[in-house]
Image (cartoon, rainbow, N blue to C red):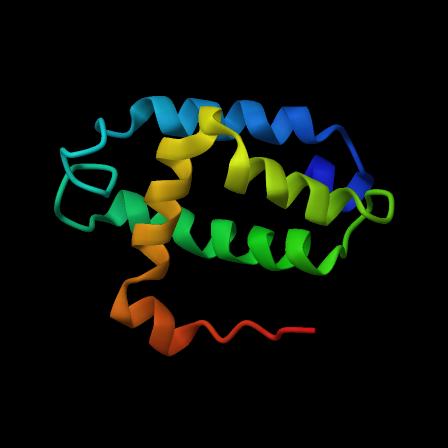
Amino acid sequence: MGFVARGEPFDNLLKGFEALQSLLPPEGKGPFALGSQFSIADAAVLPFIARLYVILKNDIGGFAKGVGPASFKILQEDEKYKRFKTYVEALFERESFKKTFHEVRN
């Protein structure tokens, strides 16, 4: 919340993503938190990640103009977050998510 609401450093949020990523099984062992099966752990983080992505892409929050898209680009392109990106893509591909989350696009 600090980054979104008060413009605190994005690095703080990246540390959280690194911690989450370290808990995920290695690629090839299933895309979700516990492997091949979607679990309550995935359901718990999915809405927060989805909303954060909308905030970053649309550059809305307590951070300076342009920081949102730049931060999103880090999550998409930095190899350090490859496993996290794969995880998020698997979450977003869930049919239940696609049916219930309708991102407003600029």
